[in-house]
Image 1 (spheres, one colour):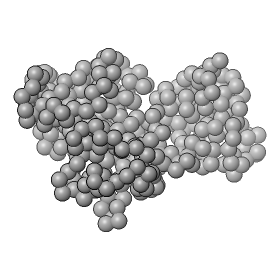
Image 2 (cartoon, rainbow, N blue to C red; image 1 turned 60 degrees about the vertical axis):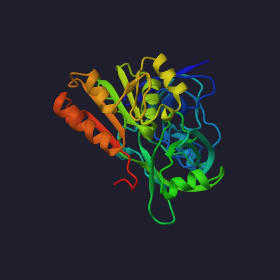
Image 3 (cartoon, helix red, strand yellow; image 1 turned 45 degrees about the vertical axis):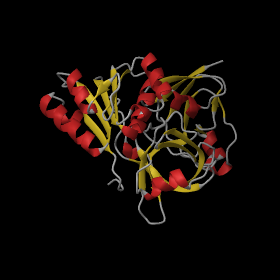
Length: 333
């Protein structure tokens, strides 16, 4: 039997099904309740039960005292509804609400999805989780003190692993390590989440996503988050690559198409049956007026810079509606 949970003061309401915790159900439906460990240890998800009954679940006593329980508090990562609920908590609504952490993680899985692209799935310690907004990135901390920045390719509702898409860069020390030396179960240190590339949910404007290469990764996270929370705005995804073989995870993209995302792949360096040339040029060809749109662009700096210049000067896109993350081979500022 399912129950409904209403969050105060926002009045957001969502269903909880089966054996879901308050936090699990909230994240699944796109509501950013605060959390950290998701294991009843840290207390970051603590909030108040204003109405209704819960099964408090298993947790560490120091994370929730008997006095706090008597006052109506619960750990939302462990508590499961036994009735319809009204809860009180401050939802995460901006970057300042999300703590930046430095954590160890284990390389859980390595999957080569293209000749020069490796998907890494990173597992955090059992008592840790990293809260983030779809589109943000993490730094991988190295012994040479030069962090390597990679966007998170998974959406927040799917955070069992942190997914990174790593391109093999000739001469790149870390990427060479990934492709030639790294093994599953290796341990890394990471810092995050970082960056301000994320979906602005308070807008009703149509969205154009522009990605080059592994700029696909944060766009993937944002699109999957948007679909998860039921965004109804028209969305267009342009993905530019050098070769047709560089288009990876196409089964995932086809699933997005079935749910209404308009996908346009663009190949620049070889003939093929689809669109050719530069990816931002394909957008220019398709849109005479971008004044009523938001654009999210990610990938090589030349692509991001060209898109911003052309869209704002020739297609009427307001500069404040252009959001970007340029991939460079040095640590991000």
